[in-house]
Length: 397
Ligand SMILES: *Cc1c(COP(=O)(O)O)cnc(C)c1O
Image 1 (cartoon, rainbow, N blue to C red):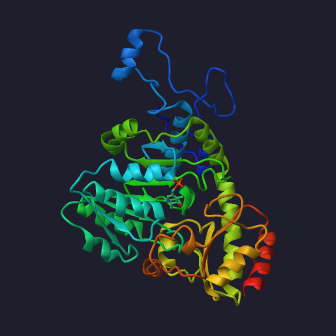
Image 2 (image 1 turned 180 degrees about the horizontal axis):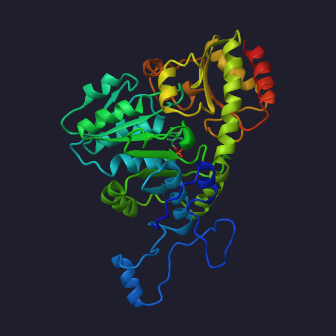
């Protein structure tokens, strides 16, 4: 809603100061404007505000000063013209996918998606007459082959959940452009620090801010970033009238999360890289997938489009599901949870939790079996995490 002066700040400075709106009290930290509405000095000013002749807030479903600070800070970090913050990552994905489409349109989506994202494109959209083709997005030719005359939207996530497969975003963006489709990228796993989809040619970026942006397991949130024209023409009215708005309190927690995002993500990534290397050498482990290791299946694309590895590791145990369950149950510091990006290290068995709704066949297509585990590395001392894993692997192995 407000616009910010463009500055040449590096990300770490932007994440501390970007988008700050100070009140007349000159508070150091961002204020929480926990208000639903706004009052007007006169009937004339209310009229002018509603006509758009006078800037200012009208109703917190549309915009709110604390939420606005979060949106401005995310825009400055991502290099986006405009943004809308949402109550959850799924509210962001749903709005980004549906706001510009109508019955008769067609979506092409990569099959390796966060479970609820796949439900939105594969199950929800067709109910409203929007067709969807699900493809193996890691094979670039599949995108071109799936294009139809009515294709309006491409959707992908990279790295993917849980197998950390990467998709060549620049190559997909080129096909999207020639097809006249918009490319929406779910950038949660890469974080805004390590991958810049807009610079790679994507048109829209979405985040679940619930993950690394909050980073301390407190609030749900999401954000959609794109060019001003698309937001004005498609998202603006959809957002105002369907109400996926972020709470000002949660916006405040997420703003404070952004201040420490680089410190946390770099530390968690450094620990994850070390843990991935140790796991890869362990006799009970069949396979490790980690963006940043030279044996990652698409190491060349990781190198081309990402400036850092990941806070997440995917690995398979030789002993299948019994070994995976035994390992999880034997862990002490690392907690069993389906969340990720938290200060606390969390481990998930995707086949029985986040991906339980897929058929065995669909899971196998994604490279996920009974022995597959996803580890989100937190901020604990890496030696303690390594000891915890080593003891649990002895039990599981
Ligand atoms: C968590 C997640 C979402 C959904 O976000 P919520 O905040 O839980 O609604 C979408 N995409 C990816 C990749 C995620 O990890």
